[in-house]
Length: 329
Image (cartoon, rainbow, N blue to C red; front, side, top):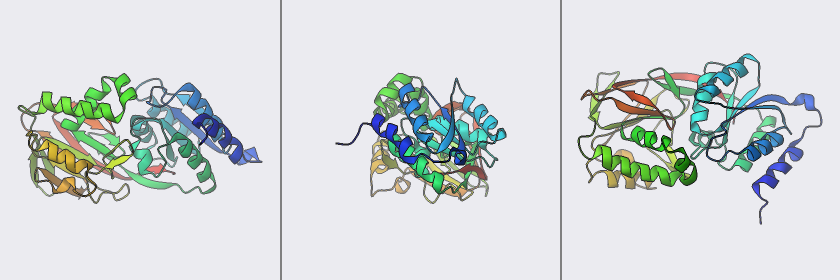
C-alpha cells in the first residue's frame, strides 16, 4: 500500500535537502486558498517539502488579480521562480503578472482541471508534482512560450466565446459545487446551460480573419495550445496543429446548437478516434496570428479565459505575444 499524500510530502523535503543552503534558488509560491484541492495543511506540507531545494516564501491570494500584483513584485524583487499553486485561473493571473519578464513561472495542481500545469508536463498529482519541482532544480532549463490575448487580456491555453463561456459562468457562480463535484459539475452545467440558453434563438457570431475570410457560428473556441481541457485526466482535443511556442492560435467555430448536432459533437470530443474538427457542424481555423469574433445580432456574449469568465462583449479581438512568458517545468 502506498503512503498517504501527507506522509509522502513530509519525506520529500529531507530526500532532496541540499547540504549547502546557500545553493537554494529563491522561490515564491502563490497560493489560492480557495482552489479546489488546496488546504492549509497541504500548503504547509508542500512549502516544507520544497524547502529542501529552494528558499521558499509563500503568500495566499486575497482576491481577483492579487496573483498578478504579487508576480509583478516577485519579478522586481529578483525571485528565481514563481509557483502558481491553484487552478488555471491562478495560473492565468500569474502569467499576466510575469509576461515579458525573464522570471520563470511554474505550477502546482490545486484546481479542478489544471490544464496548463499538465500541458507543461507537470503531474496532476500533488505529491508527484512537488517531487517534479524538486528534481528540476538540478536540471534548470527555462524556456519561453507564447501568450494569446483577447481584448488585451492574456491567456495561457484557451478562450471561449459563447456556449463554452456560458457554462464557465454558471460553474463559477456555484464554487462549492465546482469544488465538490469537479468535472461532473461541469458536465451538468454544460447540459443545463445548453437547454436553457442555446436551444432557442442562440446568439450569432462571426469570425473575421486577417486574410479577409469570414465564418459564422454560435460559439468560438480559440486555443494557444492543445488540449482544450481535461475531463479528470482525460484530454479533450479541439484545435489541431497549435503549439505553445509557434506564435499562432487555432480553434473551431460551432456552426449550430441544434439538438441533433450537440450529441455527436460531444461524442467526438470524448472519442479517441473521431476528431471534433471533422464534424460537419464544426469549422476549424488556424493556425493564425489573430482574428476578431463579433456578435452579429447585437447581443453581448460571454467570454472565458483559461476557465474563468471575464465578462460579456459584442466584439473579441484575438492576438498572440510570441515568447512572452518564461516557464520552467
